[in-house]
Amino acid sequence: MDATYHQLAERILRRWSALNPNPSGSDVGADDAPRTRPRLLVALAGPPGCGKTTIASRVVGLLDEMRAKPHPHAHPHAHPHALALAHAHADGTQDRGGPKALAISADGFHLPLATLRALPNAAEALARRGAPWTFDAAAAVSLVRALRAQRSPGITRPVGPRITAADDDEDCNGDRGSSAPAENKPGPLLVPTFDHAIKDPVPGGLAVPTDVDVCILEGNYLLCDEDPWRAIVDLVDERWLVRVDPELAVRRVAKRHLAAGIEDSMDKAVRRARGNDMVNGRFVMEKSAGRYDLLVESVEEAQSIRAPKPPIEDSVFKSLRLDGRTVIITGGVGGIGYQVARGLAEAGANLALWYRTSDGAGALAETIRRDFGVRVETYQVDVRDYAAVEAAVARAVRDFGRLDVMVANAGVPSKAGGLDDRLEDWEHVRATDFDGAYYCLRAAGLVFREQGRGVAIVTASMSGHAANVPQEQTCYNACKAGCIHLAKSLAVEWAKWGGRINSVSPGYIDTVMSGDCPFEMKEEWFGLTPLRRDADPRELKGIYLYLASDASTFTTGADFVIDGGYTAR
Image (cartoon, rainbow, N blue to C red; front, side):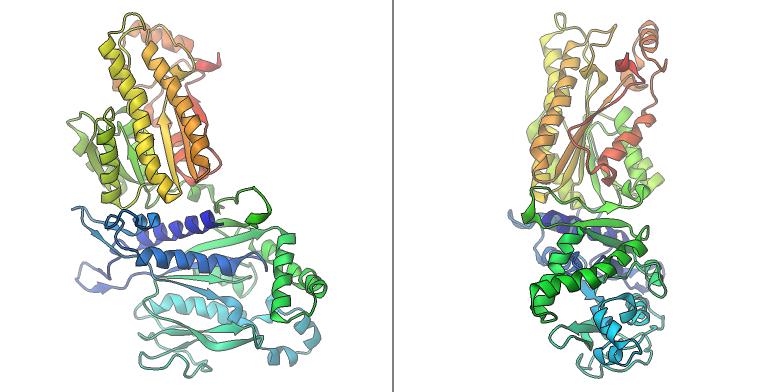
């Protein structure tokens, strides 16, 4: 599940970066007073045996690894995911920095054995240990509130049983049993843990320092729609639910019971897992339905060639967001490219807009910045020159600290048919429309392969499917057909390391490129198009957003024809 762990770590980095525009230190407000950086809280829930603990620890480990790495451009073999941790400023300088993360298990909120034995239904409580009513749920909720309050100046911590605030000079192994509420202090927060050797919670077993930026809380019931657990959903920033095949969960839990000495044979361990843990697991999935942002699939990779599903957003609207991601758009300051840029910016993407010739690139970029509050930079690049393309990709990665999406959109039309085209015009169209697309995909793809992720979109044309009339444009048609198959071929190659690539084939679009065409020619276009018109370039924003976003995680190697029905005739 390495790809899943990296995707989750990247998601946290994007969320944390959005919360912390100045990751190198505390923000400063308009009154020059320091502002404590917000803490990102993640609730990771799921049934027993789903691998929550492993997921939390691996994601935290990746975040720590990225944070410890040198600047990604300081060494040729820097960790590829460290790119996401470089905070870029408008002047091109960058701060190293990233979130300090900690995994916190809810196992410490198990009721002690002594408490269970004192219950009227002691035998059932001991047999069903791990059921929701065998936890101190109120204390777990208090922990989440305390974690939030610890980084919120002036707020009193609502500290529950077995959660204490330690002074800076106090040993974290000191007074672990105090249940008195504590005022917000600079010292660490002491949280109970669970000792499997003694099969009981240990008060104050984990210290949460104030400087922890990201807390991943993992536990079965954190997203359950049952009091008092249900309060947690509104106290955290991210809600992840892990799904697992029940038989895989039984095997995992039974092995754990046997290793911990809870049962003395595998048969007994399996019976316990089926009769207790899986009952709790069904409760978790039923009560957590519709209360998560992200669905994470846990698999046993050695058992099948089937790849794990990526983390899936429950909300389709959230899956279309591009907050914190960087997109390169070639031909990005005119026609289709500019409207695509506006659409992706509206979804939160930062933009690197490429152009070959334009007097208004800077003004258009400023308009997008003003309208959507994202970062936009412009680059003059001739996509016919691979060295220039490669250098521009490297510069964008350096400027933004990451690259997530490449939109290869630059193109020019043919001026004549195959026999009448001047060879120099043929070469120009081919070099721009086909070679240029390949150069952009190649340069971006090399970055994506190192990262183990990345998305590319090629602007092809319905002319790659049909020799549209009345204009003669053999070179353009052939290049666009080539772009469609280029995308399909690369999609197969990229899939093995997590890259995706698709193409969009627009029909007649009302842009400057088509503006000089004679009235009679356009009338023939409209007559051959079932919708009897051309398209506004804004009508293409949706398909590009879909393909750039996590809404399309199972979409690759596809061509989307948006032509008003022209090729359907």
